Length: 365
Image 1 (cartoon, rainbow, N blue to C red):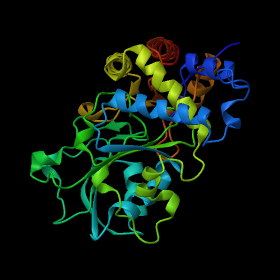
Image 2 (image 1 turned 120 degrees about the vertical axis):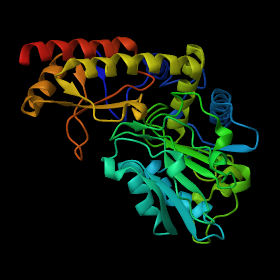
Image 3 (image 1 turned 180 degrees about the horizontal axis):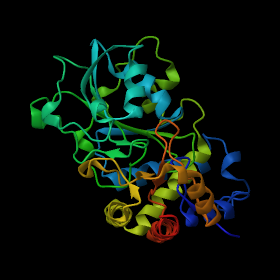
């Protein structure tokens, strides 16, 4: 069997150890005589899987006791509606910081349920930076402030945690879409009212959505919020109000255990820093490729880059694929190339990409 170096932005590569364990347990999970996909979500077998997955995630992120972890569905796209339906409460306005395509999409969806104030935006820079907190203009009494702390398309990552106490607005809950970099770096969960993300980048297969929400934010849902999306109801039913994405939770649990075996989030962050340093260092010194993001705000997970001679794009993609380096085409909205180097991508994979890019440049320059 030959596996490629998969640089997909999502669904993305999973640790090979996890895939092998899942394959071994496909027909018979731990002597139960059935696979996880066949289990009742209320049976003791799957209940033990879900409980362990939640406990491991809580440990990995040091989630405080007054936060609930929810396993939901719909991805970040659905969460763009589910969040305002749950958090607006008796207020009228939600604030949004727009740093790329995903936060732009989020604020547009929120307008169906609330008034939206754009507290800050980096659109004028073509989404190549993050506006400093000192420039954020919050409304008088927002229900929450929304951020997307890593933008997969533009390759921008917050170089700071959005702690509103620093600008005298600590009473405003911060919501963070962390779909594409959760578990890749150490964070302080207590600085956020709600963290969410689709699992298909750093956690598991598409179909599972992780929500980490502070308990005091439960119980604010609009009357027309579907019960399956009401955070209070989901929390009260331990994510089992409806049938959850059971296999996604199982795989996520295996990934959490894999992260613990690697030494935890801090150990993976050190690896991710090394991978990003290798790739960005090569890009900056190549003279053949370029990354257009403010160096202070470059994503460690999603690295967009461009060939200075874009007539070579097709040849680059064809030859990289032949070399076993796949999913490098940039998002259709921006073009160019993109290498997503999530937790499961080892340094060896990034080195293989750099070696290919160096050789390609030498032959085509």
